[in-house]
Amino acid sequence: MWPRSLLAIADLPPADIELLLDRAQAQKADPSGPHGRACAGRSLALLFEKPSLRTRVSFELAMQRLGGTALYLSPAEVGLGKREPVKDVARVLGGYCDAIACRTFSQEVLVELADWSGVPVINALSDWEHPCQALADLLTVREQLGGTQGHTLAYVGDGNNVARSLALGAASVGMHVRLASPPAFTLDEASTTVAASRGEASGGSIRLLEDPREAVAGADVVYTDVWTSMGQEDEAAARRRAFLGYQVSRELLALARPGAIVMHDLPAHRGEEITDAAIESEQSVVFAQAENRLHAQQAVLWRLVGQD
Image 1 (cartoon, one colour):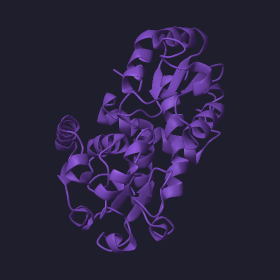
Image 2 (cartoon, helix red, strand yellow; image 1 turned 90 degrees about the horizontal axis):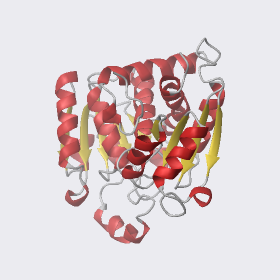
Image 3 (cartoon, helix red, strand yellow; image 1 turned 30 degrees about the horizontal axis):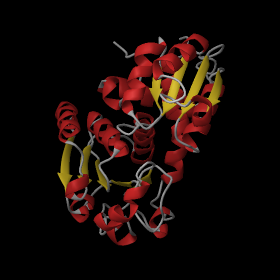
Image 4 (cartoon, one colour; image 1 turned 30 degrees about the vertical axis):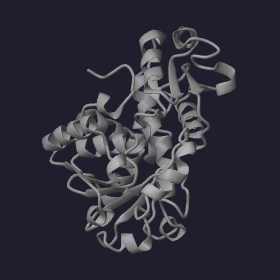
């Protein structure tokens, strides 16, 4: 049974993740194909509590390519839970629009929107997960490595929302995931348990490590994210100290498999979690990865909002 909303990558059984990746690849290869008007006459509310470049542009264009309309609502216009209760916003937007994509601080806001809106709600980023990013990441791995099954992905850095969705998604499609983080910033036990279960079923696996060199050794994919996310600015200095030694550099990449790819979900703090040389190297697929947000989200919209 396909979920009405996409609030977390674990909402999707592995077969559904593969289906979305198949659709994203098909749409990318043939933008004018038969799926091109799947959202004709449909509307998507983009409800944002955080600023964005990739998320806003990719969702607007994805909806447009499917023949629909996207309406952007800034934090100042809505004030979720402040100017107006979340459940009231949910019911108003559910009466106007066919779906809501929400970029918010709290996962609980997404759950409340889904409970009250009566329409599909898509997690466009929360403090807990970033499922659309994970789908774009897996699409990129498919394209660059010819598939996901059996490949090793090393994630170096904070066990945050991006790491959580990536680990759960990658383990679901047969990848071996290694996450290297300082002990205080590792992925939570519950998410690790779910990822391990999914990996066992798919032929993948997950390991939590402290040493980034051990994680990267022989890996096919080396992935990192910012050490300090939006809303954590007061922790920036402490986090820079905690993550010393976790920078993705040319030297660290030398431990990976020859031809390994470098990934980052952007925006990057060059000189902190990744060096300029690494992100601009011939191994980097960071900007192809960013483009794939459009195609992955187009597949999500086709499935949750489309008429076919």
